Length: 332
Image 1 (spheres, helix red, strand yellow):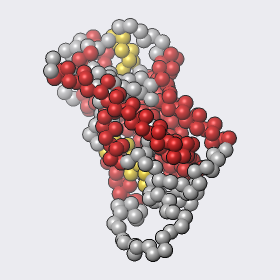
Image 2 (cartoon, rainbow, N blue to C red; image 1 turned 180 degrees about the vertical axis):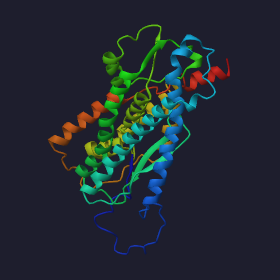
Image 3 (cartoon, rainbow, N blue to C red; image 1 turned 135 degrees about the vertical axis):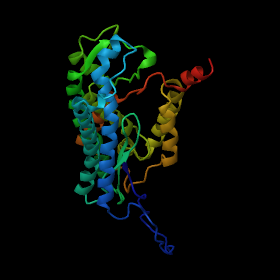
Image 4 (cartoon, one colour; image 1 turned 90 degrees about the horizontal axis):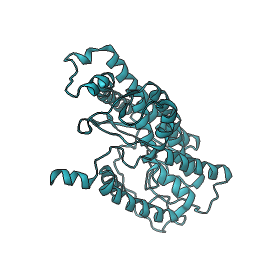
């Protein structure tokens, strides 16, 4: 994810501008030690969360055979769990780092000032809330805006795809778990297609327990899809503005309406995204020339990015967690 700076100033400034005021900004100066500290903290949080996913992966066959099974008390001392958790953390961090470095290097290519990536550690299901960079220079031209917005999702996707493929090849097929005992994750189209190659033995009455590397790839695919939503300061918002100019407001309104409906009917997490995006704002900073042509190569790349979004999008990342179902569970 990339956050742009202030909008491009008008071409004809007022004759009597107000005196400039100094404003404190956390992003005004480079503090590499903060970036490094957040990176290490996020590496630690993803490793810690990866322990539980690795434990689940190793003991899934035993649990599927006997729902009353519980891992031994010293299970976390098993070196296999340590290695699997390290693999999860390393792959996920590599995907997130590639995504943000894609933006950063694109900014450097055009001589724009941008911060190093800021990672966000969190005790969540995946161990992080992602990462972002702050673009401190205004982006004046649509082609540059497109390139910077596209670089991140493409770089992350390039690493996430082999992680999904390699992880699925190592995943396990077990008898179905009791649904009340399992967290069921949604499948993007890419995962379904990859499953045709690597999970041919999966069928009715079975569940697939993802290898931690596959789960890291799944998270990377989800991050790609979320960032490609054509809204505000998301990468997809930059791309949509570069392609459609001010007309992208209509697209934003339609997508926001869809998120609101999906939050009630499909997955409650979309409501969080809906309100978060409202807070961050949906208006995109202007460029100097909205009619600047992108050219053939970038137009083709825009369709490639659309295909990446369709392959990556997960309507319900965690199943059975929409508002209606949650309300029914509270008031039967």
